[in-house]
Image (cartoon, rainbow, N blue to C red; front, top):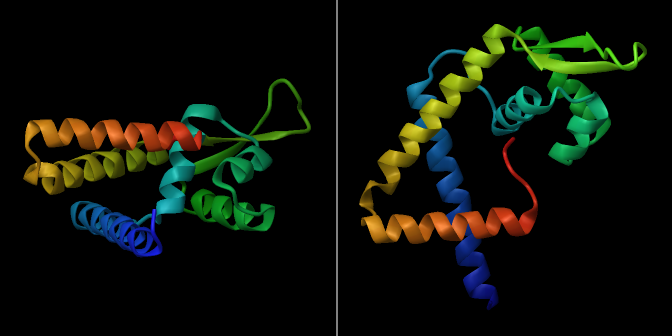
Length: 144
């Protein structure tokens, strides 16, 4: 890939991310969440991680993880619970309010994505989906 192609692709990806985030913000007006908070909620929902696991998954520093989790706990979206296997350790889990917030945001993202991909033919949408799956599989990262 040439530098020009790479720069163009970077611009497109950043624009698509911004458009999706704006779509979500329009649909969910209360308690805005950053993309990082949304990723954290999705991961916490599926894995009940310890703080260091969340930091590793989100590829952020432990102090940044503490700040992130503190804001989610302060918003009553996440709670710290004692690990049943190791009473000295804490795990993170969603509160009912956190589960609802995550569901609302994911629904908003889904609706926004449906709106912006409405320009695709069914064949183009299938190709787009296959390419996205390939990129995600090659990065070994998922939202959850």
